[in-house]
Amino acid sequence: MKIQRSLLPHVCQPRRNFLAAGAMAGALLTFPQLALAGKLLGVASEVYVNGKRAYRGATILPGDVVKTGGLSEAVFVVGEDAFMLRERSEMRLLGPQSGTTRIAAGLRVITGGLLSVFGSGERKLLTSTATAGIRGTGVYVEVSSDLTYFCTCYGAVDLADSSDSETRQISAIHHEAHMVHAEPQVGSVFEPVTKRNHYDEELRLLEALVGREPPFMAG
Image 1 (cartoon, rainbow, N blue to C red):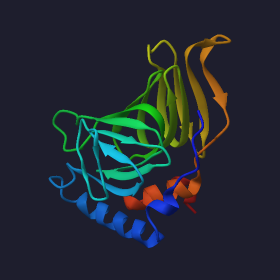
Image 2 (image 1 turned 90 degrees about the vertical axis):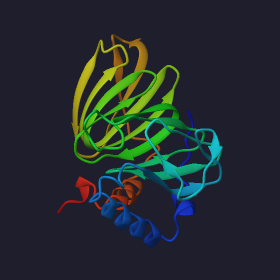
Image 3 (image 1 turned 180 degrees about the vertical axis):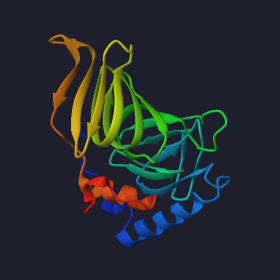
C-alpha cells in the first residue's frame, strides 16, 4: 500500500491556525457536554462523513464513518483524541463506553492510513487483522484486507491479531512497528518492521490540537 506524506501543510496553514484550534479543543474538554461532539478541523480535497461531503467545522459523532478520496486528508479532534486520516482511507468511530462522557471507546480503521494520538484512559483500535488496546498513546496504522502495519509511536499498546491467538504488550518511547498478518508468517502473525510514512512533526501538531506535547519532546 502506498501512502503519501501528509498533506497537512496544505490543510491547515499557517501553523498558528492549528495551535489556535488546539487551544479551543482543550477548552472544550472542561465542558463534558460539549466534548460529546468531535470537529473536523482540516480538510484537503474530498472528505466524506457518512457518505456526504464534509467541510471544515463539520461535527463528527460516535458511529460516524469518515472517508477520504485521492490526494485528500482529514484532520479532526474527538474529545481528548486527535486524528489525521490519509488519502483513500476510511474509519468508523466506536460508540462511548457505558456510563462515561467520552465520545468514543475507540475506532475501526477499515482501509488506508491513520495517524492518531490519544488521551488518558482505555481505547480500542480495530483493523482487519489486529485489535489494539491503547492508553495515552500515539499510533500510526495502514490497513488492507489481510495486513495491518501498526506503529506504536509512543505509549503502551496491547496488540493482538483479530482472532486473539497471539498478543504483544508494547511499551514504546519512539516508534516500534509491526506488521500483523492474517495468517502466520514463519510461525507468527507478527513481523517487526521499520517506521514508515509518518513523521514526528505530524505527531507534534496533532498533540498541539488537544493541548499536549509528545513525550519524546520532554526535557
